[in-house]
Image (cartoon, rainbow, N blue to C red; front, side):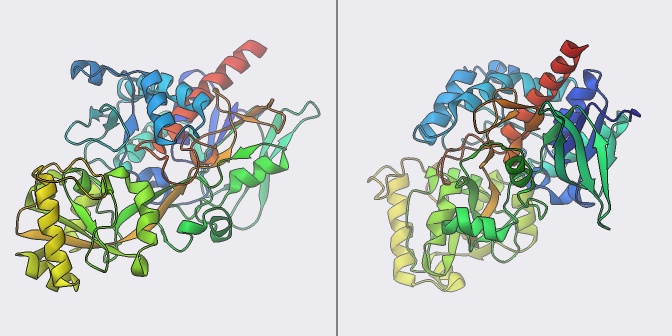
Length: 458
């Protein structure tokens, strides 16, 4: 690190590591500040399924899939019912193919296009992921590359303040050690990549009452630090009621059973033994639907075909290995193992079978069952979870944090859950990748802008 301080301080060693790697590639001196010693297994990037949308990537072209940033932004607009931030959606859509190809070619990340099932809301297959489909693989690779590149990581240390000079430009980052001691680090730019406020139960209760009692399945360092720092500097915030939920967290093992089970043809029953909606609408909004059911719990029902199709997901394999999935030879056994009313379970199995065979329309409007379920069945008791918040500081297409008047705060950037995101309001606007793409994509855009700004000032 330079005696005059780094060119860029990145707060958060998750998706923010993309900014560190890109900035260093562009010749900048970078420091990463991370609050948790256990970040490699405890932050939201590591807990993700590592799905990164890349609209127009070479993998899509090789598969004959036509896609573009414009189509991605249109999907966001449709999923959010016009409420999402189209400026940022378009900026992220436009950079997404460049991002995934840079991750593969420059950073050496092994990526492939997911085509074996289709995520709700995406009009084409555009999610790229790593082997095992788990964020630990992604994060471990980024951390290793950061360390190989000689980029300093200050851990454990929490960014608690950003100071500005008399011209209103970033002057320094203030970090705090666990013993309470503080250090002011001179820098030209700070990227807030500290995620959202999911671990702050008071903020969750204030902004997300419908999911406030659900399990929080995210980093304990996501405490709204970026919001507080930004507010003190006069920054705008928006979409604070936006979040990604999930309706398939195992109550037995606290592992993610996953929504691929649904997209391959599974369905969910509540404690009355009945389905209660269109499961393919999306795993995020279905968390709120499940939270509203009796005792806020349900049973995910699948079969051996679906089990085998989902083994490519590390989370699903961990659920299987933990004993979260229980076998049931037939409808009566399914009712017995779940404790649900036998008549209701039998009726739902028969009805979904008829819908899957195209013999009748689904009463909830579900139009896709990959195939009818076949006995023996598998089932897992699941609970709704809050994975991460999607609202935060308002940024522009360069990831610069904006003041209340709309002008940027020079040198201050935000990405991922620290930024206001593209999911609109509530949970229903979330698309697979709406967490990782803003985390990695805004970090990449921020690094490019910092480098261009410093070059322009020379």
